[in-house]
Amino acid sequence: MRLMLRLCLTSVVLCAMGPLLSMAAESPKDANLVTDARRCGSLAETGQRLACYDRLFRTEQVVDVPKTDEALFGYRGKIAQEARDEQAKALASNLTELTARVDAVDYLGNGTFRVSLDNGQQWQQLASGVTLRLKVGESVSIKPGALGSFTLVAASGRAAKVRRVR
Image (cartoon, rainbow, N blue to C red; front, side, top):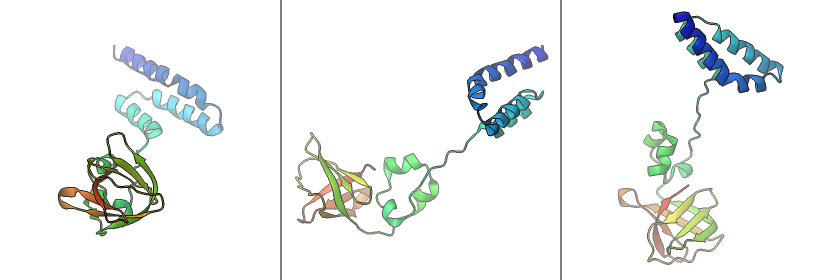
């Protein structure tokens, strides 16, 4: 019974890996992968077989986390959660204000805007009511406020509450 179960599990794994293994045989490096995968399949003990497959096929996910003060400015909420990097969340930005130039402005249908800055960041107005006419190339400042809020101040001095979207 045990031998039958082992043969069934091995055949399921090999069937699932069949397309991968057939595509992989195109180069010498890939041929070694096929050989190693077959060697893993021939292991009798389940834990050793799984560990062998994990060594061959498991990849670690690497998240690129911004390191500069400017890149960390506004790094809160959903954006910070996506990175899932506790060290970057713990770092507090030393900037008290971000100054950048406007690369693009999109006026959205709900009376708000989304602005793309020359540093790659995008900020979106939170509520309609304040009308800012931003121009490409104009310098703007973004200042942190209370309770994690941010205010974008245009060259004209007019301001609007914003949140970082990218």
